[in-house]
Amino acid sequence: MGYDATAYDDVEPRAPGMYFLRDALDCEELGVTVVEADDGWEGMEHDHADADHEEVYVLLHGEATLTVDGEPVALGPGDAVRVDADSTRDLAVTADGSKMVIAGAP
Image (tube, rainbow, N blue to C red):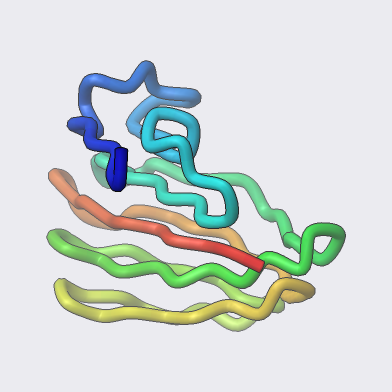
């Protein structure tokens, strides 16, 4: 078959509000995550240097701050940020009802 399909909310969340779609879509290289969260939700600081995995964060609704290498980047609806694999990143949601898509690949 030439494609795989799923609804993100049919996937068991790995953490509250975080839906990892890589396995459900049988992706070989690409990771896709949907985050649905309210004000006060925080991710954990991390990088992807070991996997040489860059990421793109796209905020669809709400507000968030993505801290990259210690520098906060405020995000509003429609904003997108690409992060190098070896850069640390930490996501914090700052408005109720926020929704974001994160895509990453080597």
